[in-house]
Image 1: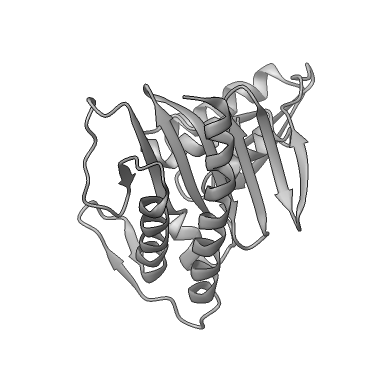
Image 2 (image 1 turned 90 degrees about the horizontal axis):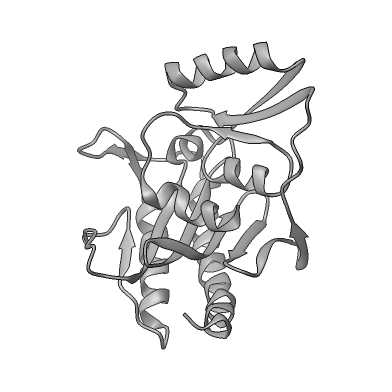
Length: 225
């Protein structure tokens, strides 16, 4: 896809994800958050559905019409579709319900099975993380854009980030192994795509996830990283 088109799309997606973030925060600030349980056992809130609606309508209004595959939508993955939007309207619903602030909104543009554009919004902190294939990654906060990058691995310290709510036995075994290999390990649990963003901006060395996950959970963070 033309790089200028992708950059133009990123500007438009920022506006869409900001609207979704505002709608989610309106619900987050309420005293009580009502939740349901989906068929797979995962929680669902009004914020998931509201964010999905805002994003879907925004993407479908763009001049460049690509299919939208959202966690809360009805469309199913089709390998024949080469370019599409991959959306998680509310990544980290458990953190949203527990009010830890560690939830995000994820929008990625997929081409040929790879994320070529990814935007992660952290509504509580007001941060936006943007990754464009071939252009690098940026963090925007309070209107200020700053280029971000990973840091070289140190020999003595390993900084690990992992899920706050979904830690597997394999994850814990990995930490035990790392503890033997490094003089010191620092563990920072977090929710949602924030973990990938922390690696992308050099605040963590590795995101430990040895259990199953969904494409919409990691696609936008993958683009940023």
